[in-house]
Structure formats: C-alpha cells, structure tokens
Length: 96
Image 1 (cartoon, rainbow, N blue to C red):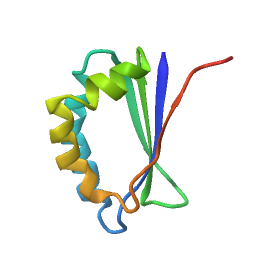
Image 2: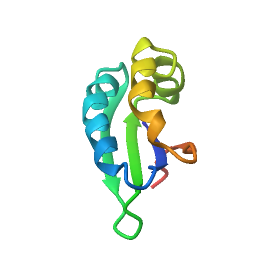
Image 3: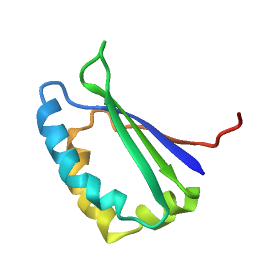
Image 4: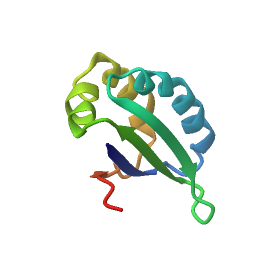
C-alpha cells in the first residue's frame, strides 16, 4: 500500500469554495481502480492549509491510473484553481 501525501495551500478566502469543490471531486478519485481511502484535514494554525492523504494499492494506481484518466481532467478543473503555490505530492510506504 502507498500513501499519497499533499499539503494543499488554498488561496486565503477560498476555503469554503474549495471544500465544496472537493466534495464534488471526491467521487471521481474514490471510483478509481486501486483507491483505498482518502482523508482531507484543515490546519488549525493556518486555516488555508489542507492535508490530503490518499491510500492506493500501488503508486502506479495514482501516477498512471488516476493521473492519466479522464476523471483526473475533471478533478483538475474542479480543484487546481484554488492552489497557490501548487502543492508538492509525495508517496509514502509504511515501514513500521
């Protein structure tokens, strides 16, 4: 299993609109092959920062399956306009 980790810096003042767009986008990713789970958390100290954690069966399910799908184009249209700067995505594997 792989955990995708991204800190999402949402443009200040756009948090409610981002959360609404994310609710609309969630079924896109959750219907992808290899998807296991997703959590989106909001920072207490910096309310425009969100932590996205997505569990995938393999890294390829994310990097190839999801990112090369038609669904990703819709995901991108819904969400990418909210980020400044664009987030960095890392993949993690459990060791303990």
